[in-house]
Amino acid sequence: MKNLSLFFIGLFMIPMLILTSCDRGEDIPVNTTPKFNILKDYVVANNLDLDKILTSTDGISFVVDAPATSADVTTFLNTYYIIDVRSAADFATGRVAGAKNVAFANILTEATAAKAAGNTKDILVICYTGQTATYATALLRLYGFKNTRALKWGMSGWNPTFDKYTAGTGNIVSGNANWSNVATPPTPPSYDVPTITSSATDGLAILKQRVEAVVAEGPKTITAAAVLASPSTYYLNNFKSATDYAGYGHFTTSYRIQPLTLALNNHLNINPSSTAQVVTYCYTGQTSAVVTAFLRVMGYNAISMNFGMNGLWNENPFWPAPPAGNKWAASRIKSYPTVTN
Image (tube, rainbow, N blue to C red; front, side, top):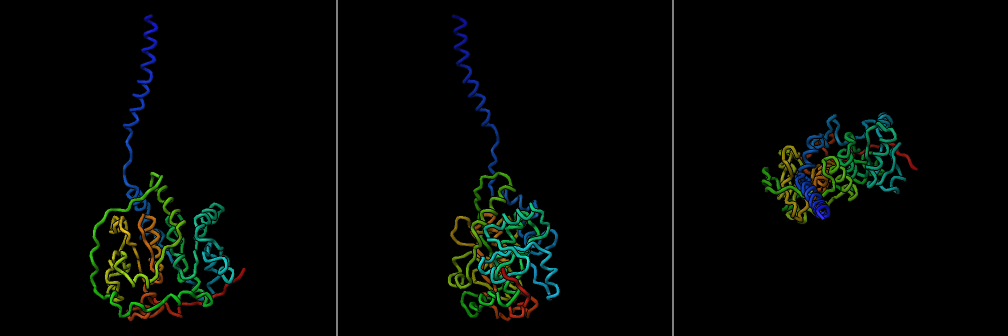
């Protein structure tokens, strides 16, 4: 009888021991650091902050001009693994020699496959005007292809047959009440960081998920006319120097967060719960595309203004005469050869 009692006591104690052992798991620390902070720390520590996306640690800019002369074209094209993200129909009408037509949604897959197949060339992305290509370039750089470049002005600057940039230029802000030459920008208010939702827990994995998500969304842009119609509904960031902020003028409600890096600014002062979109505008729409891609990866509701200052006020007297500066003009357009399928 005594042995039987001990047997039942033992049966009673087994689940108690199991429950006690399970309770110990509650002592395992849980990382409650916001995903934005994990991502930010990784990006800064691994030379992927915005300044390193605009110019890589090797000193390579995100854009490259077309060759200076036709004699340099072949050497120039042979330097790169060329991705053309225009539509298949437009690609078929004319492309640079050696280019491969890749849908924007497939740029990461293409770059990864090319590397696995032994490609050692830097990637060159080509589009219509340079704006989609620079957006792609930023995302490819963040994904690990750090010296990817975009062809400045895209096919618009390569051959006049493919010029789509000229149609995007304009002078819509000249004399407009929403445009100002006040030298001192308003001080941005202070807000919390964005909330990033990710199944990943380490910085690299979070970054890859975020880049893949932004690629899947496609480029995010807005026209200059849409912003001019109601500038106060957007969070506007004039991405120019202090001299140019006043010299070219700016939207009356524009901030000027320049330089913009996570190391210096921690984060952009924009309310993450606000519906206001972050609109960055620059000179050509190409730098702002890079900034916008970067901000979207970091969790901001950001969009890039098409054609930048060229779409706002192409004839602004503050522009330096081409070839200096970034004013779009017919003289920017080369007459380099293209091939068809």
